[in-house]
Length: 498
Image 1: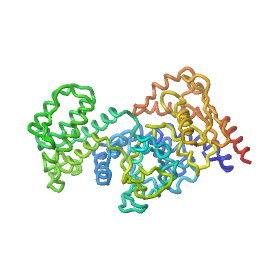
Image 2 (image 1 turned 180 degrees about the horizontal axis):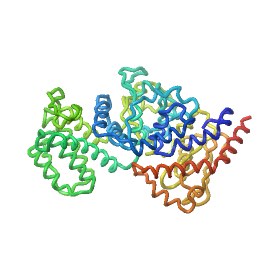
Image 3 (image 1 turned 135 degrees about the vertical axis):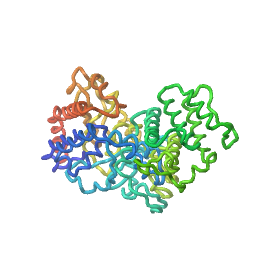
Image 4 (image 1 turned 90 degrees about the horizontal axis):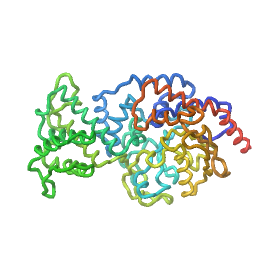
């Protein structure tokens, strides 16, 4: 929050809107809230619409596949697109194809939306200042080092600072997929996507036929999908191994080795096997490359989704290959072959970058608001993280110290298992004041913090209407209970500035 005098009369309304904008998984909720212009002036309407959609909405397999088919045509198609089409759409119960830039100028009374991701290669190489990447309706870029590009061109191919190949803008579903992919670990994410792909294939079977009608390469792909699905479910895969070994009998990889599954299979072994099969499949079955082949038509089902369509199986094949390669968030690099003094040279030499959920590094977006140009006076941290209620603010302080970014000293004596509902950190005159409010605390669920944490688990992808309303009440209680303290801190900050 950046303080200005004209915010004070609207302080109460602002706090109410902030409360409600963070009650669901932050990115997925925020993108839904900002569909409504000036949403903070009509919160009851926005709240009702979101709850109704989450409880009663539905996205069919066919709709998901049609969305996948659109994004499949883009350069740098990745697992993020698959995750968005099949998993995120099912959780948020809609496919939102509006571009983020469509929000420009429509939220003059609302807090400015900032979506935060991280640069995967920078994270892996410990390039702390270059890791934080923000996406807004106006510009996208590196928050700390200050390199930005207009949001309408982010994702297009660049060289020497100029667009060399325009790409369609990312829509809101793509953004939800990009920013919201840290729901689970590798195994859980893999399982979610395997199930989604298998559901698509099995829906076509129920409409059009059965396994025996498939061509050989189609049988291999389905058997591979079935094998992985059962493996990640923890089921016996002996039958799956026998099936795919029979289908690939006599097949050899590019080095001449026999391709066969045997013995006890581990995660690493299965991943390597998947990659080998996908890499060699077009050589074993050249027809897989023929997307112009005449497709069969079936009554009662859209031509977008046909079990005997070469195009359909080619897309399934590409999805599976991307999945095994674990290729997330690949995006053209707008800094490619530029000279930018404050940006690490390794970034400037890369034609593409991989962006992933910022929660994989820090589960609260401090560094986008700590951007120097924003001149922040106050950060209100409504922390919904699981586990240690101070982990995010402690980590932010440590990272700021490493990067020499002004930040207050973080000291929080008391019971970490049942934290208070309001903490103020303000000992550094060159740094913003930080207010930290854990979601479940002694103020809104005294004696029951652990009970509420267990009720709302990180890996739970859907809530009932009752659970949504209960969570909303708890989040709003935090603002109601601490409203006067919040106003007192703001008043004191304004007094100091005059």
